[in-house]
Length: 331
Length: 295
Image (cartoon, rainbow over the protein chains, first blue to last red):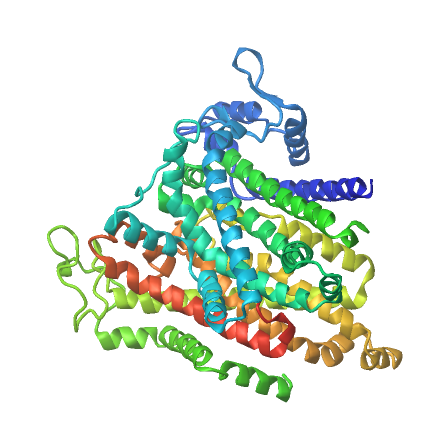
């Protein structure tokens, strides 16, 4: 019950943050620099054509009304224009790309599988490697393993993903020729081919992150093993496996989950770079293309979609915290 | 800065050969950035395109030489050494300036939130939540697309990166301020009638330097990385200003035929980021031993 209340409060907080992010993004993209109707109207643009485009896109009304219409569209869907030419954008309507004649959410939906496949696969991989290595180096405080993970963590943080990606492609795809040079196969089409195309991005991203997780796990593990309740667990005769694997690990995972929430959110939002390197057409590619064409509805839609992913990841982290650590449930 | 703190920082930087090497790398890069014009004129080159050094296919006719220390850029023939040292200037300038903006904002906002508390603290905490929920990389990409070309890109980058950077610093400063506010000397100053600004300047600030130095040293490399990432995607620094990220982005297409073109700017970016991270990490370990093992 308490967990439920906790979840509800966190959810409300998440929605509030999203609302503010939407407001700011909306103001910046639609009102400050560029006129979306003029951009969509094309050249030459007659005054009547411009007025028509304004009316059609719903940007002829004051900004607060536009914002309200936008929010309303997310909840209940909206219609652009009237009569035979009207375009309906079903809820949740994140906007409509007048340049591609399709709603923004469909555009994102078509590409989201790529971004998710890259991010989630990589996260699973580095979590397993990182936490495993961290526990290992905490238990066997051998200085060789220890020093390598320490150095690896700083190197991983300092290495830009695109440099690591290019090195990976050059070595494994061009020189050794063991993995594909880029591209993507949908999982429904051929799961083996799907995984085959993703092996390199997964390992590159995992290589960049795993050592940091190992370091965090190790530090937390060493601290936890010194706590009283671990001594109690050992004193009452629990096997060491259970002491480490159940009692200690539960406490160790808390900071790891926080970091994972931040990383996963920014990884999903930051697939722009990974996709560019590995030649995959995901949400990041959509954004870059929209930048080139100044496609404002897509820019706004992708920003909001990423904001949603980030806040949702944070929300999940909070939930995990609540489940793992009873103290966190007290608000 | 109090004297013991300076000593701690100096000792931490000079602690072992690994950190020492990293500090020297950072100093070397700063030197390259400062002396960029001098070094490039010593080499006898400039940032101007020069197609006479290219072969018939647009690739460089020859690799590094006495005339072109790092070789030249394919298609344009711009000297690569000039691109790398001027890129160092761009990277460091933006990294430092954005960090200064973030630290100033973070220090003022964090300290005031921690010291004053109440509704201001709540507003700050809430704004921090919103900024953490902001997909800033995506937002920056979209923003650079819609800002008019008349706005200088470096300035825009510094302001926006600084703006998205302050919450991290404010959080650390606020936490430290909260503990400091409990201390007797702050309470004493308060009882004697000191105003918030006076307390901030004479009581809080001297004790806030330690965490601020740590977060700013670690903030510089992430700012440098962000600038490079944006330039890599083509929405950061625009030509003719040199930028490592942009050079790396074009170099990717030539990685098979001209790997040196990628290696020089790539190594420079990696080394300067690594250097700052290693130094920042060991300074933090020295100032706050409990943090050992975290980044």
